[in-house]
Amino acid sequence: MTRILAYRFSAFGDVAMTAPVFREFLEQNPDVEIIMVSRKNFESLFAGIPNVIFKGINLDEYKGFFGLRRLAHELIKEFNPDCIANLHDVIRTKILDGIYRRRGLKVFKIDKGKEEKEELTDVWNLNKKQLKKTVERYADVFRSMGYQVQLSHKLRPISGPKSGIGFAPFAQHKGKMLPLEKSYELAKILAQKHTLYFFGGGKNETETLERWEKEIPNTHSLSGKLSLTEELKKISELELMISMDSANMHLASLMGTRCVSVWGATHPYAGFLGFGQKEDDVAQVKDLTCRPCSVFGDKECYRGDWACLEELDVQKIIEKIRL
Image (cartoon, rainbow, N blue to C red; front, side):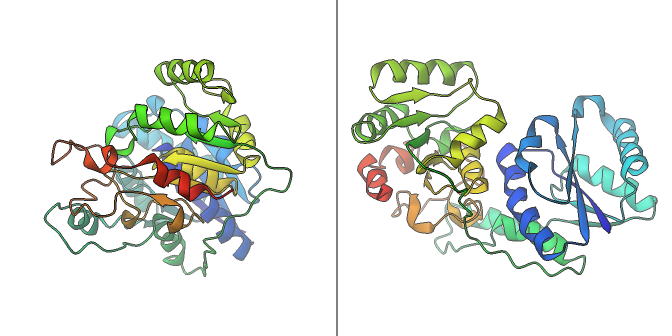
């Protein structure tokens, strides 16, 4: 059994995207075991994937070069890996790579396509095209080790009755998030025909969604009420998820649930559409030449009017639902 030590520490959605890749890679290469090192609270993402051992860590306990050196030595001592898969490629993981190389281990790392993404998000670039999907970039790390990996890019719904629509109206950055008044309007329309479950986290999101629950009949706020394991189970039982370009889209992919996703400053061209999700289920303003202006949605609007989100008609999202 070959043992690969893999690491990806953040962000939540990016870590979630590794799970379906691991599942299909390990099905095709059953003589391999992956030790996935990430933040402790991400463990449920990998539950039920054979040959994945999850090692949760608290990064605050391994600060600076000496902290990372201690982490590297602890992982070698505990798992004795055959090689390393750096699925993150940031300063912290580059330091780990160097320590492992000095210990004689081969290190394989993700090509994030930074220059291609910079070109894609240049507002003056009028020739925008689809870049390699992030899940394929993860798979490339294993291919560079000499393994065959063929990703299906298909959802795997979990069997059982499905009911209701999930709605996750929040995202980490403004450039990814439908204005709340539009999300509220969307929720009111959807709740006339469907039971609607709100997903969110954190104090402010929970307060907003609990208010919506009181004001809109046939809605239930799950924000702040579920563990990650419970949240994943609930998503697996939904007929459909509606999410911004954010972690909930990737959680839906992981649970085999179809997701209608909303995109503003970001764009599926950058490669972050959820595993197995369809382009037809993407809601976006298509005729803005400045899109995408950002890979992560964290930039200020170049035009100043957030047209990519302000001009998105909620009716366009409703048309995608088709239940």
